[in-house]
Image 1 (cartoon, protein in one colour):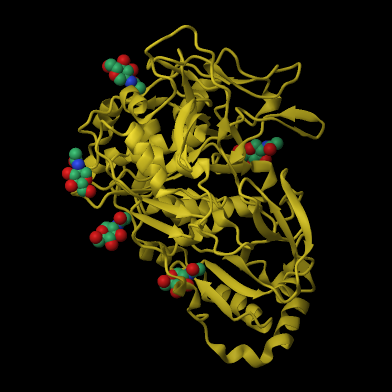
Image 2: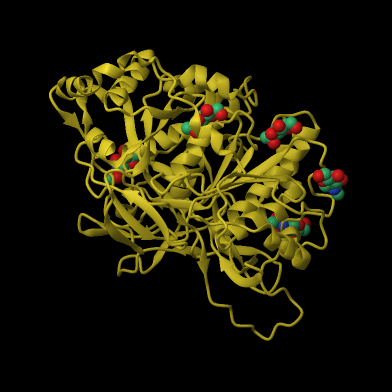
Length: 578
Ligand SMILES: *[C@@H]1O[C@H](CO)[C@@H](O)[C@H](O)[C@H]1NC(C)=O
Ligand SMILES: *[C@@H]1O[C@H](CO)[C@@H](O)[C@H](O)[C@H]1NC(C)=O
Ligand SMILES: *[C@@H]1O[C@H](CO)[C@@H](O)[C@H](O)[C@H]1NC(C)=O
Ligand SMILES: *[C@@H]1O[C@H](CO)[C@@H](O)[C@H](O)[C@H]1NC(C)=O
Ligand SMILES: *[C@@H]1O[C@H](CO)[C@@H](O)[C@H](O)[C@H]1NC(C)=O
């Protein structure tokens, strides 16, 4: 566990402004006549499964995260390209966190303006990060409501673990003078993201005996051609991580039981090497158990970290807190898997753009971020009176590697994979198509025989997923109970992550840097080393026009299973060289 002392460091600024407090605040509010709304397009409706418990006492403490405007974002994007494009002389020459800080750190004017504003409101308990572009501050609800005009804090309860959060049902405004300095304020609107996990009924046995009944580590290792030798050597500083956001805990005892039941034929680690954040004493969550158990079965014998509910308080946005942690720690595992996401249309563009920039920062550092593609196929929603597909974020970010899902053609045999109809995939309405996938996506759009009507998706957007793995019928041990038929891209994501960690292991042993942001190389190699899934379609809108069908997989890349599923020896061969 991480110590609690991290939060007690005082606010790093000169305190000369204290006496001017309220006057300074008023001056800032009055200056530039009035206020602006940084996130006018952020959804504020209560997500299903959450209930309001009424207004919070004004003396209660809460924390808010201020995303400060960064510098040199053009240069940052050039550097991402340079370090992740195998043809570039800078390929694999990653930046340190300190280099990134040097680049993106907010201007002195930004730091000064925001600090003055906070101090003027009496907000002193703030914590910055190495890159200085986030400030997490503690204050009373009264102070927060004064600082962010229009906000009103209420308590809500919901989610799978009956989590409490404090949020504002009303939008907030900031003084206009802050517009050039603050991207958004976190901790007001967004509820914890939803997990990409589904439980489906057991398939009907078609008289088959002696074949596998559900996906276990040995099924995964057999299908992806991992041998007993394909495990972490223990001689590198390699590691991998998964992140949990819904007060979902894992238990080491579940991991031990899982490995006793299913881990007989490969070397593995007995426990998680490091937990960052808070592991409550509550029951284990299926999502957390699944992630840990399969990351450690595919990426077997590799040191594994878990980011557990990184928010330290009910008022925080745990996903944002995870990003804040990444910017505050210089030594991180090279591979991170995340099985959570939200509908793009529920998030403000200020937020998504900034989170995307955080992913760029991670890419320059050589971190591989894998996100689940979602569990509703192409998705569906009604906008301006007509149906269209519904992309999910962060899956739709051009700076992460997004993992879709497959099923076995014969659910009881370790054979070819076909599309799992729930596999999330589609086209972003926010991020344009990145150059690395230009050719692959154009090829798909011009050759797919079953393209949905163009009004259902935005063909100019970033298309996902990039890769896939089995997502159907997993065994998980949670709270000492083996649970069958757990499904979702929540399962495929840690499996793919573990396999990339094994490749990193070989790269580190050969003296090469880790893979880093994989997409430019993956598309350049046309998915070499992956099993091309080209049978099946995923689900979408249940209407007359598309009748529940989204996109269909085909030869090469497609927005259902990306380039396909990992064939470890072949993938290793194409990714081992510098
Ligand atoms: C970042 O790390 C430093 C040093 O450990 C700590 O003082 C600070 O509070 C951390 N920042 C946040 C936002 O947690
Ligand atoms: C697994 O890792 C340990 C160190 O954590 C190492 O001693 C052991 O040799 C590794 N097992 C194999 C089969 O490489
Ligand atoms: C690498 O090893 C050092 C020292 O053994 C350790 O402090 C650090 O956390 C490790 N880094 C990662 C990413 O595991
Ligand atoms: C389509 O995607 C582009 C980004 O590629 C975006 O700028 C545009 O607003 C999107 N159109 C719609 C209707 O959402
Ligand atoms: C594993 O190897 C077998 C035999 O070469 C091959 O048929 C199968 O497709 C491979 N698995 C994947 C996922 O490519």
